[in-house]
Length: 185
Image 1 (cartoon, one colour):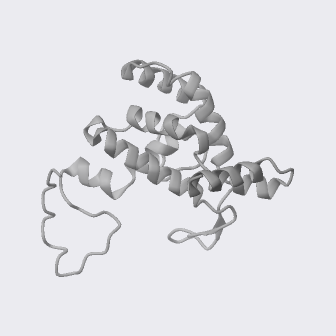
Image 2 (cartoon, one colour):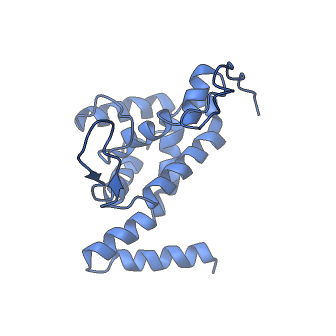
């Protein structure tokens, strides 16, 4: 038995325990669990095709890591000019798991990408989501995956076709230099 299989099995058992905190932690730690292929298909559907399948799979893996690493109750930055400290809400992992299960047999069931996109747009409309946020909010796996990527440094670099490195510290000496164009790997 592979180590990954053993860990997933242990987390699956912990997720069935009648202890709410342990259950929520186990579901979050095991995300996306059995829905890994669905998450990859979702990423390939909603993210730019120019990323290629390997690129969208990488984003799906990064998003899964973000969800797995989510810690409810963690202190958040209060934001500029705000004295109130905010705390992270409950983990979105259980909601995302249910949504991925529903999408697997619903909006993502088609082999045609354009049909999947239309059905996902209708799904977001039914959920009352009309805009992407600057960071995932735990409302819907579709919009949160998109927000996760489109707010990333890689998305900004791709949009400007330059190595801007959003959210990365640059020295004052290099701040006046125009970012280098992106190179194809």
